[in-house]
Image 1 (cartoon, rainbow, N blue to C red):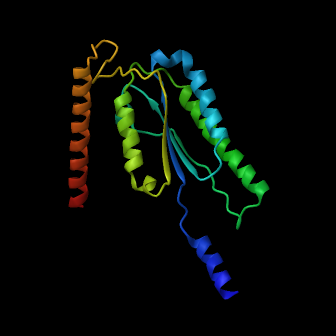
Image 2 (cartoon, rainbow, N blue to C red):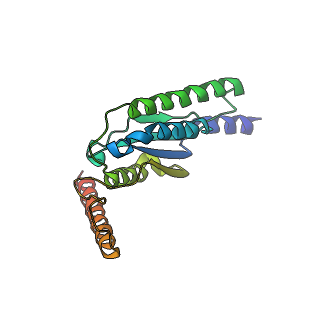
Image 3 (tube, helix red, strand yellow):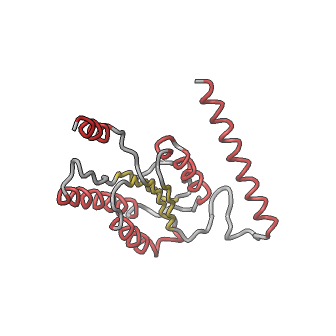
Length: 193
């Protein structure tokens, strides 16, 4: 009996970790204006399918996705615990959390259209989320991008460029070098502190 009680309290004292980190981006550019309702509808289906244990971060893809770097959607879907939850109370907490996340997504979608689409910056932001210490313990990391997937930013405008295999390779190499340099500088800053 003593071992069982000890095991019970050990299970309760374990720090909660998220099973899933879900990073969601919504294209808020003018080119995606007509399909925003579809993005929202699809996101609501995703939110309704969450079962618990997920941390959801969501942001808009704007002209400066990385520079703004703010997640308007930041919610945690509670995880079911047979020790503290009844099925009824858990279902109610789950539905409340799902509704809150959907409302945050609606607010994000209701904003003004962005003049450009910085997809590369959004992908860098997702990389930072997935490399962060808060995501390190997650069993699964998911990225969902609701977009027309056309980069149209200050760095690149793929609608106007001739995307030959050589140009695509050059862009990929440039982005890889930028990320490598960013990580190197980040490590140097952390080691100084």
